Figure 1 (cartoon, helix red, strand yellow):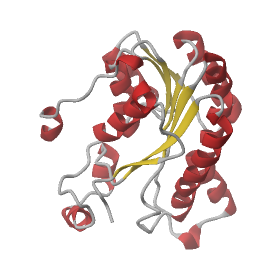
Figure 2 (cartoon, helix red, strand yellow):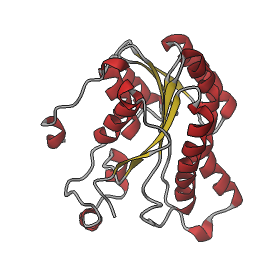
Figure 3 (cartoon, rainbow, N blue to C red):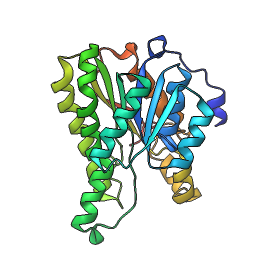
Figure 4 (cartoon, helix red, strand yellow):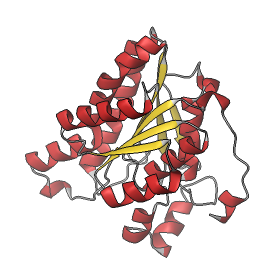
Length: 256
């Protein structure tokens, strides 16, 4: 975090008062995205299952931030949550599809039920949030959809094959929806994080050995704070990115 504190970040005037919805916003990368948009003066709504951390974040950021408790695997509940947020922040013209859960699993133990649940957790809601919010963006004259992918499948990381499959599919969804929505001036892009040092990663998987092994795969020597993923989503949500669509934007310190 010391490097973050010494960094001077950009302000995007086009994000002031813009309505933004973020999935999985209560903690980790999602919470940094919520903070980043709130600091730009955007009207922010987020959905998450974690009521405790959602309330903490809302209390921290104030009246321009709202949340709904929702299980994104339940599409009907998700649509109701999005409608409730729209009633508070207005018609969103930025959507950040961030929610995911990178549980480790052995390919030998995967059942059809587990497979379907992981796809519902990590992929399916991306499509249905776009389907729910794109009509409003069309009426507004355009917008930005930002899907959060992963470089894990590019790097051939093991121990979570269904998660990696879901994340790879997000890139296909991004490309095809960019084509389908482009005539309505809706940009669809994918932010691709590397190994981001969220608290969950630190609690579950970060060890001195794993960190040093990963540093060898990065071009840059520093570990990646979640704030840098958030900053990339700001650029893609802003007017500065009006000619960016159907693309991947890597935040992985040059991992190979």
